[in-house]
Picture (tube, helix red, strand yellow):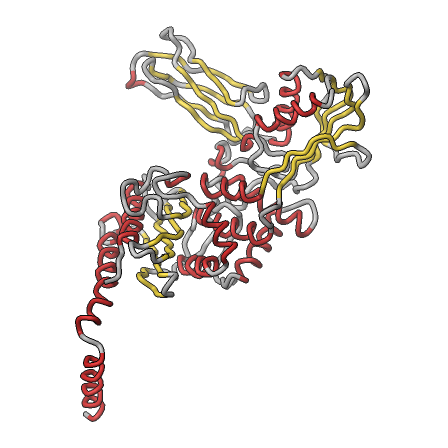
Length: 482
C-alpha cells in the first residue's frame, strides 16, 4: 500500500512539472506513426509472408518502430550495402581500377609486336572504352599487330561464379561470370524483331555486334498474337555461347529482348578487342591467347575507372557483377593476387565488425546477395547504418551512391509525387519470393531516419510488397513531431 501511495504522489508531482498536454503531444505523433506502419503491415498480403521492419531516428537515437527485427532473413541485393561500404572504407576517393595495355615493341613503320591486356576486374569497362583505347593506339602510330594478343588474367583466381547461386540463373546477365577482363557486363543484349513477311524468320540483332556468339534462329513471324511464344535462350547445361531463338513472334510486336550472360568472359574481351582493332583499320591476323605480361613490355595505354564511380554503379543499378568483382579486387590488393571471393569476404567481415556488427550472428557468402545462403537481420542493418551516419566521409560517399526515390537507379519509378520523392535514398533487393529496402530518409521536420525492411516467402510478383515498402517510406517522410 505504501508503494502505491508513493507512486500516486510522484505521478501528481510529475504531472505538475510537465503539463499533460505536452506529454500527450510528445507521444501522440510517435504512436500515430507506429499505428500507420502497423496498418500497412496488417494487409492480407502479409498473412503468410514474413515482414521484418526496423525504423530509427538517427538524430535522436530513438527506435520509432520495429517488427521482428531479429529474424535471420535473406537480404537479396541489400547485401551490396555491406560490400560497397567495405570498398569505400578500404579505398580512398582517389583510387582507380586500371585496365592496362602493353606491347613488346613498336617499329617506326607502325607495327606493334604482340599486344597484352591486363585486367584488374573493372566491372564498368565497355566496348566504347575499348574503342577509345584503340584510338589511342592509332595516335601512337600503330597500324598493324604482328604476333598475338595476350590476355593477362592473373589478378583473379579461376572460381568465377557465386557460392549457392541457382543453376537456372546462369544464362542471364544478373548472374554473369566474374572475370579480371570484364567488358559489357560480361553479357550480350539480344533483340528479336518481326519480319515484314508473314511466315518468315524474325530479324535478330545483338549488342554488341560480335561473332563471339552463335545465333540459331528457328522462330517464325505470324499475325496471330494469341500464339506468340517467342523464346531467347542460352542453354545453362551446355555452357556455350550458342543462343537459340525459337517460337512465334507476332507481326504487330515491336520487339522482344533478353539480356544474357556469356560463357568465357575473358575470351569475350579478347574477341571484342580483335574486332575493335579491325574496325579501326589496324591489321591483325594472329591468335588470341592467355599469358602474363612480359616484364620487359612497354605499357602504352591505361584506362582508369574511379572507385566511387564503380560503387555508384553498383548501388544505383544493383549490379551483381560489380559486387562480385569488387570482392576479388579487394582480396587481390590486400592479400596479393590472385584475388578470390573468400578472402574478399574476410575483408567485408573485418570492416563491418569495426562498424559494430557481430559477425558471428549472421552469414554472408557473396558480395551481391544473389545467394540464398546469406542470412542477416534488419537489426544488423540498423546498427550498420547508424555507424555509417556518424562517419562523415563514409556517409557522404555511401549516400551519394544510393538510388533516389522517384529520381534514379532502381527507385526511379517509385514513390513519385510524394514526400519521399528526391528524399528517400535506399538499396533495393529483389529475388524470387524476396523484396527488401534499406536506407535513409528525412522526416518532414528534416530529422534523419534509417530504416530496413525485409519481406520474404511470398509467391509471384513483388509489386504489392514494394508498394507496402513505398507506403512505409512515405509515412516516414510525412512524420512530424508535435
